Amino acid sequence: MRLFGTNGIREVVGERMTAPFVTSIAAAIGRAYPVGVPVAVGWDGRTSSPAFARLVSGTLAAAGHSVVELGLLPTPAIQYSLRSVGAQLGVVITASHNPPEYNGIKCIGADGLELPRIDEERIEAAVDAGEGRSVSYDRVGEIRSDDHGAERYLHGILSMVRRDAIIQKHFRVLLDCGNGASAQTSPSLLRRLGCRFTTLNGQVDGTFPGHLSEPTEQNLQELVRSVPALAVEFGVAHDGDADRAVFVDGRGHYVPGERILTWFAREYVRRHRGGLVVIPVTASQSVEEVVEAEGGHVLYTRVGSPSITHAMQERGAVFGGEDNGGYVFPQFQLARDGAMTLAAALDLLTQLGTTLEEALRDLPQYHVSKEKVPCPVALRDEVMARLTVELGQGAERVVTLDGIKVYQGRGWVLVRPSGTEAFFRIFSEDRDPDAARRRATGLVARVTSIVAELEGPAGRS
Image 1 (cartoon, rainbow, N blue to C red):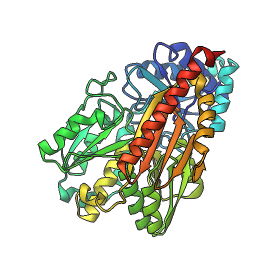
Image 2 (image 1 turned 90 degrees about the vertical axis):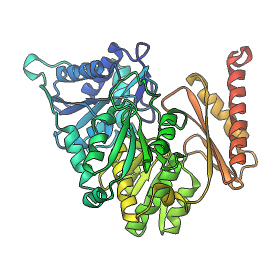
Image 3 (image 1 turned 135 degrees about the horizontal axis):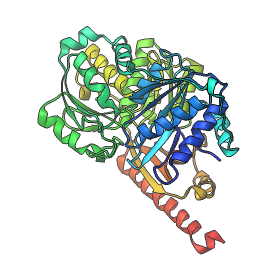
Image 4 (image 1 turned 30 degrees about the vertical axis):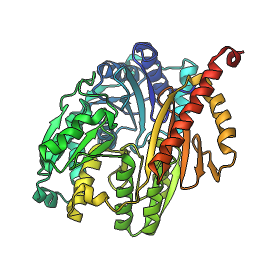
């Protein structure tokens, strides 16, 4: 039984995500590691996160592990703290950008990277077998708290940028914390970098009253409207666990994640006079175009930060990230990191002496259309099998690294099952925005048709 998706386990609270389910996962984790392994536990601001985190802590301690609770923090802050607290494993209770009814579990290795698939499979096998461990009274692990995670994390970020130079610029910023975990860290980061800033949704609230947690253009309309109204230089928004950062430029234009990914990739390859950039199959062609122009090269991976960060570690990449606002700065840590992204953007703008919109102006102009289509998990394989046959006919190039990606003329289309929700995600890119939209719309219609056919009486027979 596969439990871990592209970024951990995510389920609806009160349905599958229940106290017994969480306890079974924690028991399997406790069984998968030798008695006495120190574990750090942290959580995001969702309503159920503290309760589930304490179930995890107690179950692990009963299995003989010493536990340090890091508390409510951004996921990258928890990852950054593991070495400092001597943990060989991190367990984070978070559903990242998912809607408020979700929660989840993410496991982090001692090096701060999300566990490789082989380790997730060990945990899944232990859950399947109902395996756990209880130790005698004299071997029960200690549970203690560490309250220094936010300060430790911010100090680390500040050491990576030209702090004094940024302070002298007096940037004006509008920060949307999205009622998530970034409220614990990003306002303080901006303050220490001398920014004049205003916050939106700056209180942690797991019901996400300001807007849904995923920082899409639709969900960030208040930020889009407010940036020009307040005459700030740019706006930035985080998702629920603050491993992503999405930008709005000074004119109030939402900046698609692929534009920021392309910008960072170009600038970091320039800094290193070459080097490798790791991106997923969903990333824009613009990244490869600018990286190769600067003497670097690109490696494509499956979607999801574990695939990207492990490839970055193995290949010594200078930068990596996804087109959804999740960027990885290996000089700091091999993790998607929203606050580090914010600091890096301020650092680059200071170095370049320009505005965000000017910095992005000369990037290659591609247009990406993104859609999603509901699909029951049980039908995914059959839908993919049909699409692989249909889309591959007459294609110039087909890539099946993750889903199916088909190159046609000046663009491409990609369809892949979501690793966190019961959807197919559809991506289409072209230099012509109408062409990108047409391809995406056509694929949405085809996937919808196949799902309807398979759900009907003939499909079930």
